[in-house]
Length: 253
Ligand code: NAP
Image 1: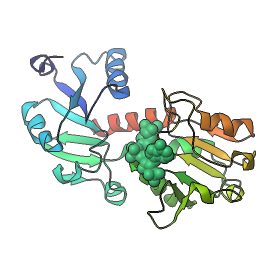
Image 2 (image 1 turned 90 degrees about the vertical axis):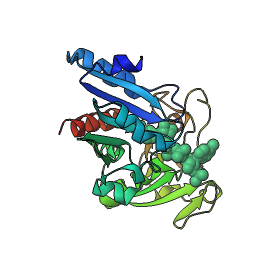
Image 3 (image 1 turned 60 degrees about the horizontal axis):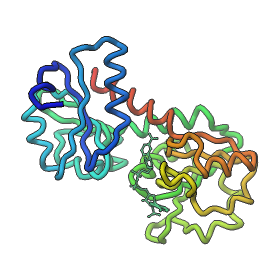
């Protein structure tokens, strides 16, 4: 939509990142505005070639009330904010910005989305220890939630770069000790639906909980392999909806 047209709305929201080819958020929020007859609300994509363009974006759109943040700016945006939520300080990544009187405050609603959706399927008497596959931004939000809920975890990485980090080749013989296995890698995401993390799947049993942050396709190759061995499975769709609703709540406070 043209710049002059989006400025006619009283309440403007949007997504910053680069590149922004497709977006769940734009469709989600504009559908919501239509359903709830919020005719003076609009959600737009703002691809920024550099995060330093954020200041100009906010100055140019006085009606901007909130932003979502995606790759590659979840960390890089922090120095450009006036304030951050205490959880952001611990995780080091922002996915939601509230704009009030020209002041920008950063939040991480992935934490809320992951925690709520995990707790709905987790059985504390069975699921005690977790493996986090991948060490990117989403993995840090996941680790924060696990720690908060008293669940021991280990990262699994392709490279042995971090403390408390296993490599995939070290996993055979170990899977029974970790009842929750969380995929935070992009493996299995459409269109590469055949790919999955390199695990010893023959060690998977009914006591496992497989959680995949990927939500497209709804049943990834990773989840399929877990299900075949009797594991409980959960994809990232509920997390995605919960993090969006939490952002909406923040923008309305
Ligand atoms: P990211 O920063 O790119 O990190 C992904 C991590 O996965 C990397 O740090 C890497 O860890 C590992 N990895 C990357 N490519 C790999 C490959 N080919 N094979 C094995 N491991 C690989 O991405 P992110 O922002 O953390 O997001 C990760 C995934 O979560 C994405 O698919 C994203 O769409 C999804 N996500 C979903 C939600 C939701 O609401 N459901 C929210 C946030 C993110 P190592 O280098 O240590 O191996």
